[in-house]
Length: 242
Image (cartoon, rainbow, N blue to C red; front, side, top):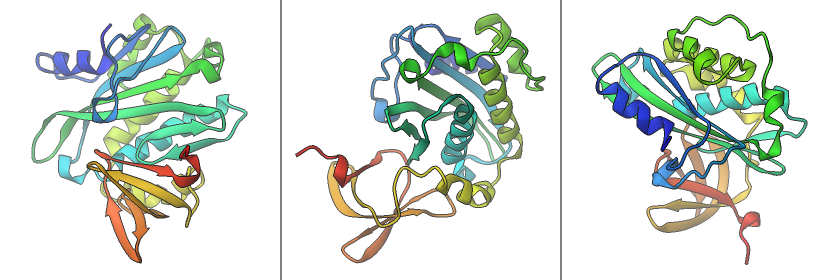
């Protein structure tokens, strides 16, 4: 398959219903800023099409909430500590573990349909350890397809159940309530020297955490700035190879 997210975006034009799609191998996977997401037989790549009962413009913090759900689901299978790197990547001490991309396919004044694409680099973990013969019961209609497309996978069932619950209950205050949970996994330390890359510019400053809406809080030249996800990325100065 070229891309699970691309497939669901096309499917949504004809069948707008909760859907799960998993690929044994993606040939044209992509991430933020259309960067290629390379996958192989050791990768776990899947996407979900689901409806959120909230207007598109009130989704601030959703990406961080989904990343938090992902890291907490993965945490049971890793001995190493896992970290959330804003806006939506997951790292361990060994390297990047997972990333996600959220795309809107339809929206109105009260709700929106989103495709959530997730890729997991299983070179750091045995894929078999993510599986269990008897997954817990689930409620989302699209979970029925997991048994057909991805096998009886405990990790997928538990994660998708969590995302299904999030799609039904997410509101503009959700991330604010989960900010402390996010901070426990933050890749960066408060006050750490970082570089923000924004529309071709490299801006040096210090990391100040996230706002209650999931925005990056950054201090540069004595001034506080906020950034949303999208074309913005951040790196620690200590990670830059001279």
